[in-house]
Image (tube, rainbow, N blue to C red; front, top):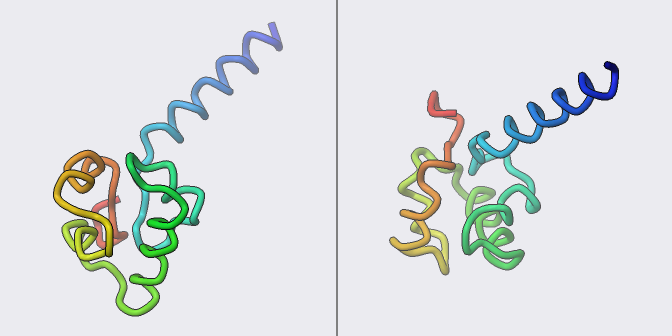
Length: 86
């Protein structure tokens, strides 16, 4: 019984993480790299961008070097900025 409970608990944790939005202003390099078409280099670029000016909305994501409309469209449902959108 304990094994079943543990398995269900682990599944719930995985689903929660899988559907959690990535906060562009606070996410780690690893969290940013989990986005579609975002590797380590683009994750670093996102971090550098937000250090200069925090993201006010998710559309600013496209201002990061190497992030265009296509990458934005593929990730927009998984992004937030912490401004009442997470």
